Length: 302
Image (tube, rainbow, N blue to C red; front, side, top):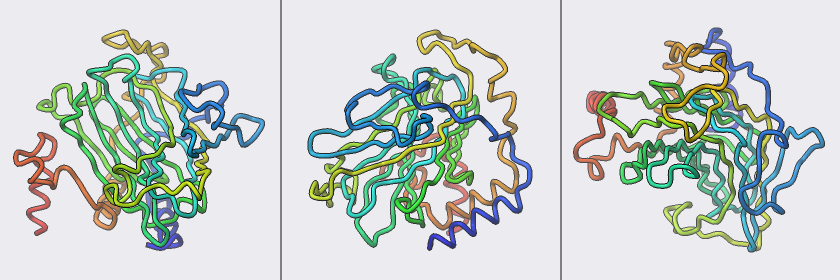
């Protein structure tokens, strides 16, 4: 899909969806006040003097990354991102939530991962959901973006509430993972911080590792701005979690996706979904519990 076509799709979504399940008019977070580096400090630099935007760079010496100062128990995490241009095979850019700092063997995680690109090819984005250290039960879904994410900023968002996790691109829901009782601890349940990184993933990222990073195109630059961290700020080691401010409880303000949002999500997935763990019987002969309905729908389509 061409850039103009995708923007037209976004416009139709805005035009016909006048009421969202929850308000997204949240204030932006100041980078300098809300985040701290986790590695490659000298490869992280502000783009402006107001702390609204930052760039991450990768070269032969190192990549870099940052994390939010606070952890959140149920939240809306969002940022606008512009990816490295030119040949960027092997370059992994991420935007994700995690609590692995505090829970090494049983951490939770929600991922957006951009898997590098070869010129003239469509960009691929991978999403994933982990709960309670369920790394052997990855819940990957991959999508073709259908637009060039190096030409302009696009907004990537994750909503995590007690019974649902939703991934958005430019306010379009592209994936929902609903909690079912049979998932048990596989559904994230502990406060998570927001992370962003850029690093060399040549071994697996682009074409399954077929295309490696070429440092003659370095430095690779990823730009981030318009950060949103809205939710229940909580002590990451206090279980069960307790909100520091109950007015930020996302569960009280999110009523679920509207019918129109579900139609838009279905349309996006039909056009852009390239892999789903729910449709991989070789990997999961017995589908994971939340996939049963998805498998039934897929069989009916076929």
